[in-house]
Length: 135
Image 1 (cartoon, one colour):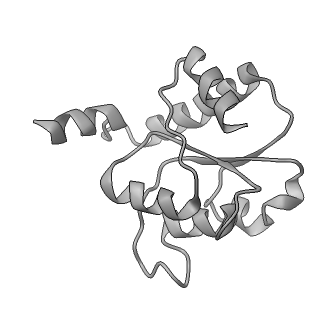
Image 2 (tube, one colour):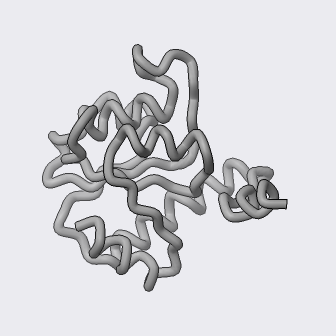
């Protein structure tokens, strides 16, 4: 699924990074930033729900460390895979139900990104941050 989505989203105008595990994701967020996160609800290890809590700094294990406030979406087989408090509390913005067409997924991602960018017009795109760090 990750390969399919990664390739398909490139054709929809996204630059993608696939990260294999929740723990690796937490480490990557120490080093760089992104514009949106798409989680697989069936993520192994600590799981998608705990990863979202840790990215938002709302886990007992993460302490007050907020790694990101960018939009997080999840793909799930059913809405039951993601606990309702995560979507109501803002950790996860939307749960998309699989199977989903790439065009529909891209539309959902762009809607979330555009809404977030409208609320945070001062924030640079992730690529701009990376370029600035490289200088």
